[in-house]
Length: 84
View 1 (spheres, rainbow, N blue to C red):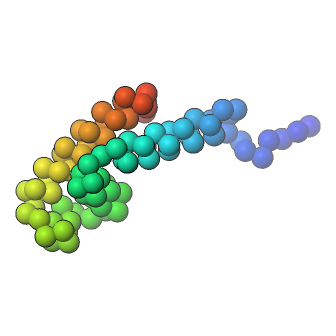
View 2 (spheres, helix red, strand yellow):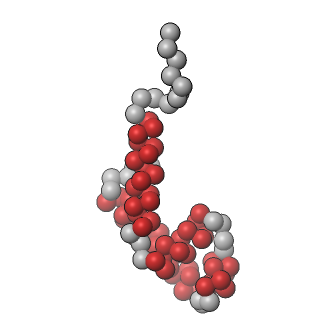
View 3 (cartoon, rainbow, N blue to C red):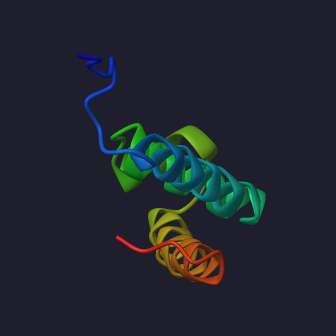
């Protein structure tokens, strides 16, 4: 009896790889300033205040960029057919 080394259903790995690629593409398509704050806050766990200090920006600017980045990121994922 052959037991697959990968216990995920057939095609699951392909779907996971495609979703990762969609996320990379969507992030790459963001404006650089939006991408930077989004990655630092959502993926690296920094606070908006920390990012503001590091980049020399007013905290309100960072918060606005995060908001705009999240909206643009969600739209880019939807455009690529990404579903949760």
